[in-house]
Amino acid sequence: MTLTDLRPLARPELLGLLGRTPLARITAGLPQPHPGFWAKLEGLGAGGMKARAAVSMLLGARERGELHPGAPVVESTSGTLGIGLAFAGQALGHPVVLVGDSELEPSMRQLLHMYGVRLDIVERPAARGGWQAARLARLRELLAVLPGAYWPDQYNNPDNTTGYASLAAELAVQLDQLDILVCSVGTGGHSAGLVAPLRAHWPRLRLVGVDATGSTIFGQPARPRLMRGLGSSIHPRNVAYDAFDEVHWIGPAEAVDSCRRLARSSFVTGGWSTGAVARVAAWAARVHPGAVVATVFPDGPHRYLGTVYDDAFTTAHGIDPADAATRPVEIPHPRAAEATGWARCTRVTDPLAHTTLAHTSRNDTPRSDTSRNDTP
Image 1 (tube, rainbow, N blue to C red):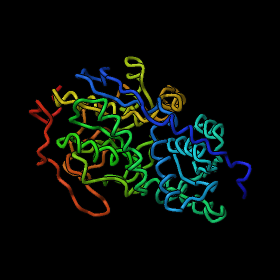
Image 2 (image 1 turned 180 degrees about the vertical axis):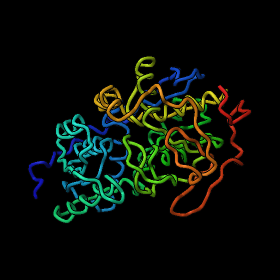
Image 3 (image 1 turned 135 degrees about the vertical axis):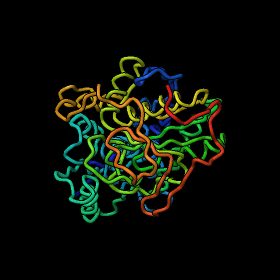
């Protein structure tokens, strides 16, 4: 296999397009009224949110001598990081080979091909670990036949986390105060990369994680997942478990309902991750009156026109936005009950360490907060 014909010329001027995304005030009912929260619109940045991480991982590898000039970059992706790596590959002059799976949307495949990416598709999920495990198995096969190829390993690469320092710096400038930060969790990179520098500005900042039902990141059993972009069938070591104050699991109905409400009432919207964090951010703003709440919308809606915004798709998959939960079910521990819809837990667990990290005693209750019960 040769990638000579795919090797791009470095375009370092593209790096000037990275970041500096706008911050929007969201007041749309999701589904109930709330005081509003701030959303960082990463979908309006070149390469999307994960371009920050992609550039950071490639630059870090080059500095350590792990990635040589013009060498190929190989990674597994459900799509979003793929766009970021396509951006980083063009900017830094590296051909990009991505391993996706047969559930990758046709629009995303077209985008990746358009950006010059070589796409390798696996057709069957692994018996253990699902699509992620199948993609990683194929990735290792490619590494064996691509001389000098570099695998960023987004799930366990600290440079993934440090890539979001610029996002944290932008939020610190754009906001005068921040009490609650709501982050979707997939690789764990952006939540870990944001919380440390932002707590340097606001030590009482609470971090709320948003996971997908069927994801095993926070100790739930791994199940087949319809939503892409958040959740995992493996345990990424970039997840900063001890930084979270609570975690919410969101199902497809809640994400779809939120995305469509955002589109109708706020114009800015996105995909599964955006719908999930918007739901939780609106809830946090409602139950913590007076608190300043912010979240990150990782991308825009275009990738999801045939899924989240397609009635035929949602009907075929048994998703009825009218059935979406309006508040979370409380569970005492991640292993106490399986979350099949919106659920919340204030005890955060690293499933590999088998250590429970309770945050209910943290002295960081947001201003004007008198109760953690969901009382609209």
